[in-house]
Image 1 (cartoon, rainbow, N blue to C red):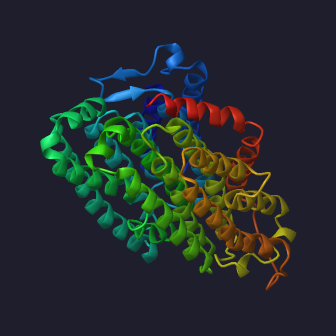
Image 2: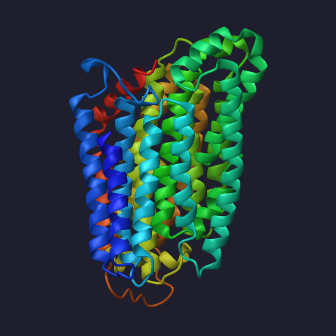
Image 3: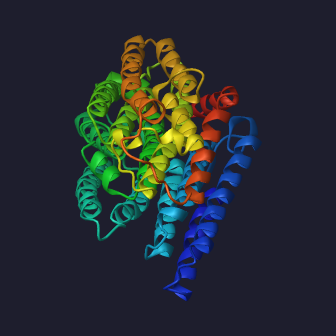
Length: 489
């Protein structure tokens, strides 16, 4: 539990610092403590993952607290994603929060949300999954509204909160129906209970699909995506990156475990509860609507928000392409690997927009015209993010999408891979608009960038480096993810 404890302890230390000196404006101390905590969590998760903790080679998953928490390869893999994205967001926030009040609360809320996400990845009970989801969601509502004097930020948070409250209620009611059918909340026991509950298939089916709806909200999947563009546009930009990367990955982390362990395809599909088909429909609609909506945007931040919905559709293939006897571990593992690459490239793209906002340039494509003449290294990094998100070789996003589509084809779901490939080709249109504006277009006015925000620069370059390093390291990454996923089946 060290990766989770490190995040929670850091959040408490930040609250302690703020309690001792409530009016502190020592942003360096607060950001430094938060960054160290995230990196310590990253170190623990990476160490355990490399050592094989909780994996079949070392004796299998480690169950804790009456099997409500499980430590295995998948939990550690996702905790690695959460810790890395949290570190990037905290470093970027160092400049973004300059002159703002409540800095201690901001960093502690980020760390508490990350703690909830890390717990979601390790949840082996529907009760733990629900509590950890709320622990991740409640700080997120406050973080979106952090710019309290900004009407757009408060409005976005209210919409996010209201839709989140409804989805939590749907999720909780689905859990209650599954509990009524099986008499247990531990995932492995739920599977055994469903196999014997032949007389309550209808109740179980409604419960399963209500739980599916709860996860669809967390991952911003269509038609539960309405909150995402508003929340991402209104939130502080580093938080937009945090929500669109780490929060989305957390939703998939718990969904992968719940649906593969508690609702096995081989048991439920013959009973008439065909949840992979529901995820297939969600995947196609989500990636298509997300990409088409992104292509119509003139605001770069809103474009990234809709593109993140499209990427949720790609990741959903990991659940949609499951079958009774296919290479299920391969397709889930490929989806996990894509979420890792996505964490770096998408967070980096939002942090670049935060840097542009720091220079008061605006958020439209035209505002980026000619920016490469003034900030060439930052524009190189943004180009890496855009082409990687589009899935162009030789960037990390190409390899992760290739592994995902190839695994889907191997499982017999070639049509899902085809829809994904067509949508990836469409996404190149709007991602290339950013690159064209930065490198080809002439500036509409004289660019005066002012001070160079060190924290934002470091975060953008770190994200770009991570995206590039995942290219030569992708083989071991995807093998680790697929081995971790295979252990679930």
